[in-house]
Image (cartoon, rainbow, N blue to C red; front, top):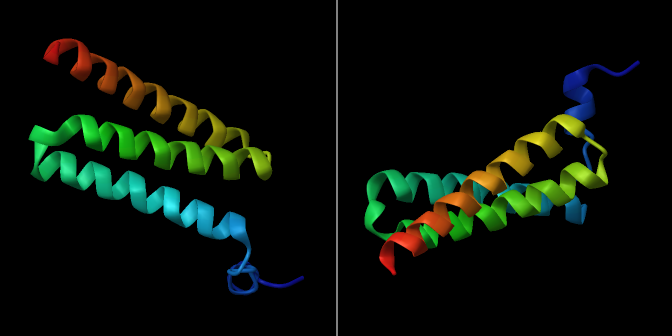
Length: 91
């Protein structure tokens, strides 16, 4: 049985779902960092983070990862709520 580190190194990094997951992670982390450093554009950051969460949700569904599905559903819900509140407060 191969070790866990060997299994990670054997991951098919060219697979589209790997890139989708990485892109989703970068979007979420980038939006969060920008929200901390430049909060005046938070509507944009909520939107970017929501899209990142949706990308990771796609990967979670593909791999039937219930824990990640729950996490991403919550993340998307929080971002949708934040975006809605931001739009409501501006109008």
